[in-house]
Image (cartoon, rainbow over all chains, first blue to last red; front, side, top):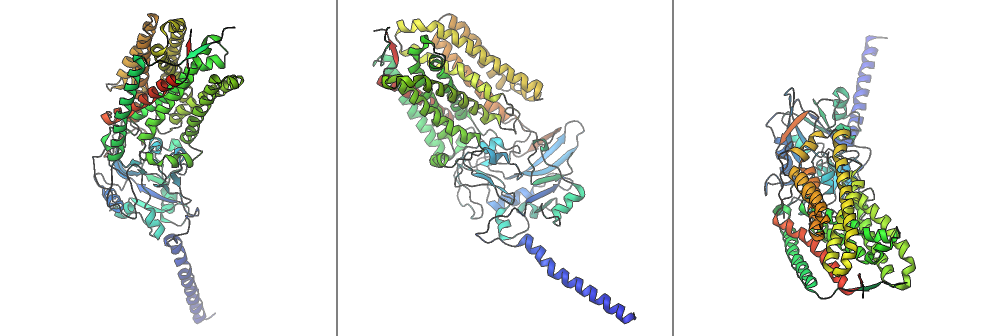
Length: 244
Length: 380
């Protein structure tokens, strides 16, 4: 085989690989960012989640909290005891060694959510793609879900609200929590407000069921722990840098 | 065979005073409930940390007591004890009245009480709360049927079967109410299987205490003297049973469920809960009533049993929520959302106003029904 033939074959091979890549890549991308039609249900093909690397989470930084508040129109009203907090920054200190950790905590979007089990009307529900939400139309405000949540991730709306955002419907007398920015997911965005705002990229959002997603690859590489894992809730939010 | 006669209560001063107290209580609680619903729960002491407050303490206490108020009727029908048969009618009425009072408070504390219809039409059958809604309405229905069989001689032959059904239902109901807490795996105070049985045992004394107060206030003194001793003795036994099951709860938490720090918080910290449990529940609510019952101070003793019961439920419901939940074992947490600290709670007057409505509703139903129907035994 002449040098010309060898060169021609390598050129054709590279061109074919490029062509195949260009054909497949948009498909792969489309699978993760394509907007859902309004009448299209969430799919169990996905399980949305977050991976939080506590080694990258800086003490004192609360950009994720600010971003969430802005995204959903949460404002301080009658004090921290009764104000809604969908995400909070928690600092943890080991009682003996003094080792410190910092992490955002929000609804952990459990695979086996206690809030869904206890809700008398079914207002607390889990979508097929793993997002745990509250249907504000049938929430009666009994707060049993808040009693049941092991992460204190839910808030009750203690007062009248005005100027709510269309993307985050809220109302007095109902319970609410992190929605994993479901409005963004449903329109095809590939990130949550908190994750997007993190300056150190400590938060990775993605599809836990897609082995090629960044979150799955990071989990495959370094693993990720659940908070209060003894409860076996199969959380959609995982943490790196915390003791197993 | 002597036919037992019954009589309605007369418009005595006790009746008039009870009606006035009940109606004033209703107005006060209506005002409290209206303001809470109008302004929102931020005017109460409840928060995102202490989620269920004083209205829940009172409501749960009344619901649990409702089951116990049926004691006398159950002993009469299920165990066929003749002594208790003339007293069974009132027992059923007090049971329904207490349950309706408790439910009224729970309903008016909801964030959206206007969605009652949704609560009655959307059932999540994996929720013990949804099951309890069925249990409560079923209890009211079944007890009313039972009452009917006691009041109407034409259906008297069904009295025993209705009594047995109501007895079984009340046991399930109280276990179900306890299980509302028992299934909460998140919190150390509640995640314990004894909650259901404990509520059943606690209900016995609290319900009987309510029943005895009504009996003492409205029954002929002569008639009351005949039954007082035996019912007082029963109350002493049931108070001791309640105390025993409470001790078992604390011991199980301490030794079996590794919740020593929570038990220390509840029983020996400088918070209000040790005072409530040792001072109000044990001393005022158990020991003192037992002494008073020996001296025939039935009303005072029963009142103290009730106060002790409310204190116990307060410690359990509020204390259980105040105690911080651990996020990561071995680590102390701090945050802007009260992580890692004991949440503070003090009931606002709005909550107390709403809670008082539960007692007012129960009193109104009991007294009004006693006036309408022949519920109390008569010697004449």
